[in-house]
Image (tube, rainbow, N blue to C red; front, side):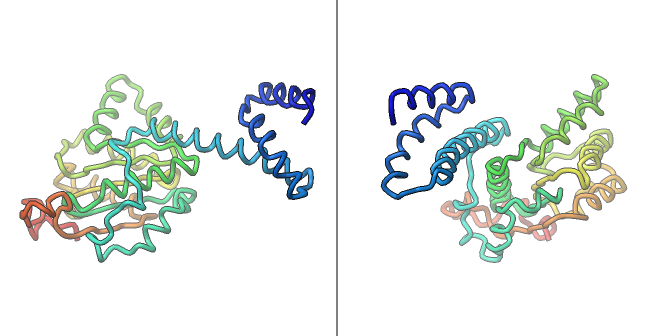
Length: 260
């Protein structure tokens, strides 16, 4: 390319705030000539590099803003530790099609069986697909809602959260809530019903949620909305974290507390 053409490309790249166009244009020009690309093919190739870079950058920003406690991928999940878990089911969820339909995912099972890993992995997949994601424990969500309620801003907070394509609620059932907290959590679930998606993880079966939320009626109404459009996955077995310790059973994995 002539110096004048290079200068024009640099100017246009700055004006469009697309700095990668300059590099891609120069690098791909030689390839385009050698392969006899059409002008349209060359333009598409240059623009695709810019779009790909922007999408990757945007995904990284969304992942950082989500509040994940760590980076976990679906590909790194120890499926051998969960032989009953259908890989096809997780692969389908990894396509993010359920998010477009405002469906939910519920992961039930004893501690250490991979619920949080899968929740984070699906959240990262969603981030790459352009969805805004927020991750927090059930306790942290309740605290956030209580703060908004105290400030008289609960409707505004729920409206703000509805703009997130996916909210992840981890560790439902680990700590019991009072009735006021249960009502706040119900409002979160209700505000997202058929509008935006939830992922919930819990060490308890649904039958135990009434005790956790201190109100069986509210818990039943909440579960009804969650599972109406949901993939419910039950994980079983001993904790993966204890696989090399010789410890086979934890208190939460006793028969009366299994998530079945």
